[in-house]
Structures are given as C-alpha cells and as structure tokens.
Image 1 (cartoon, rainbow, N blue to C red):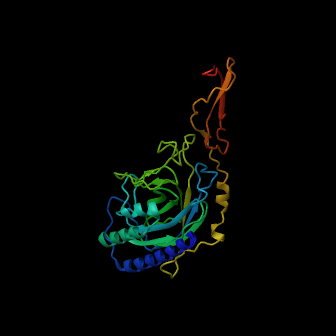
Image 2: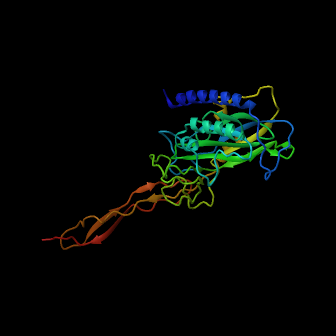
Image 3: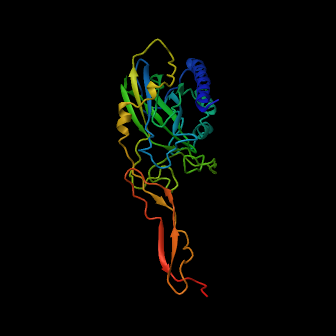
Length: 338
C-alpha cells in the first residue's frame, strides 16, 4: 500500500473516532469558565469554515528542502473547540505524550484520548475535528466546526512532514468578541519544536531529547546552529510557513460537517499562494574547510606546485552568496630529492 493510500485509511478511521467522541460528548454539561478572562455572551452557537494553506515552498525555504523520501508535506489537522481552562499545547510549556507522538510520528490516538479525558475531567472540551493531510508543501485543506459561548476557543496542531518533532498550530484563539462572533480571522503560522527530539534537520534520525525540553518557536536564528534546516542568519524573521483562515458561515441543520476529501481542485494553489511564490529567501553557498596541502609536484632543484581543495556543502539560491573557489595552489620545493 502506498503512503497516500495509507494516510487515507488512517484518516477515515480517525474521522470515525472523532464523530463518535463528539457524539458522546454532546451531553456533557460545561463547568463555569474562570472569571479572569472575557466572558462570551453570544446567545447562539457559530459555525466556522477553516482553510489551511501550506506556504512551504522551495523558493521561500530553500535550505535542505525535502524533495523525496518523503517530500515536503503536511499531516492531517487535529483541532479542538474548548473553554479557556484547556490547552492542547502551549508555547514554553511541555508537550504531552499525545503531542509528542503526533509531532514525531503523526499518530493522533493518544492525543485524542487526552482530549477526551480532559472533556470528562474538567468538562472544558466541546468537540474535536480534523481534515485530511496535504500531500505537498503548498497544498490546502478545509474543514468545518461549531463553537458555543462557553467553548469559544480554538486550538489545533499540524505536523511538518518530514521533521524530527516540528509542527504548526494555534493555542486558544478566542472566536468570540463580547456578544457576537468574529466574522473572519486570519493567522500566519510559524514552525514550533515540540522539545522531544533533538534532530536539527528535516531528515534527522530519531534522537530523543532527555530530559524533555519545552515547546519553542523555531526562528531564522534559533536554534543557532548552521545545521538547523530553518537557520537563515541573513533574515530577521522567517516567512510564514502556513496560513489559516477562519470564516463564519451560516448555520445548517447538520451538527457535524465531515472534512472535505483532498481533490485536485482544492490542492491547486490559490491566488494568495501564487503571490507567495514571489518570496525568495536568499541562501548563501556553504563550503567545507580546506583539505591539507597535497604533495609538491615538480623537478628536483626547481620550484614545484602543490594544491588543496574544499567542496560545496550547500549550493546558494535566490541571489545568495555564490560559492568561493574550491581549489588553491602555491609554489613549493620538492622534498626528498636525490
């Protein structure tokens, strides 16, 4: 079975589980939300469409851009609607076992069980939803969900594939504004490190972080290591690697809208994505250190020539610095002449 077919099977089973969990959670009575956060007083629930756009293009992120085994792509999205006292994940917090498994392997079962347990324990979760994976760095996925006044917050996570434990997402975005729902919300997304794997590159082998680190945002200068796949020291900020738009739609009689299956049409670039292809992140050429000087070649009694070389570690791109010379020579006098 190929990778795409396997992902579809997993997604179908995962969607079925979400529907079951949502149905079971329909009768849970919410607990009062904390008084130190704004209260949502909207009288009616709201229905939203979520559109995820990948902006992970080779021109915007040329360094070590994955082209095969596997190529750049996105996992399915796992989202939660909840009250203010729940967090799926938090910047500078520790990743749960569910977030660890999802960010490292794309496995969502433990994460869903954690969401279910939180709903039963503190009654802060209203529903969970998903959308199919995007087979490409610049594809698109859509889904719909419902929010209520006591559960007006949205959180979600999407794994960056391939990566050690990197993801994008949002933590606790409030869709309510006083007594009404926001019509449109647009968010640019940047990569996060779950703090559970110590790999520096997209294709790094599994190397568990012990002890576990906190969740941190990956920037153009952090982690400050030239091997880091997102290390672009010439940039002040990374370009957004993805974008999500939330649009309030008219309520229908359907309680749960299953996400759209990926099609050729909804994976074609939108107008915004075509515009994003104008982002050309400069990448400087990187070369190795010089080799030792070679043997001195020449006739005894005369000056000779010896050479040393270096090789390209990474070719430049998008008007980055060109590679310097890769070979040098100097005069010498042959040794051990008779």
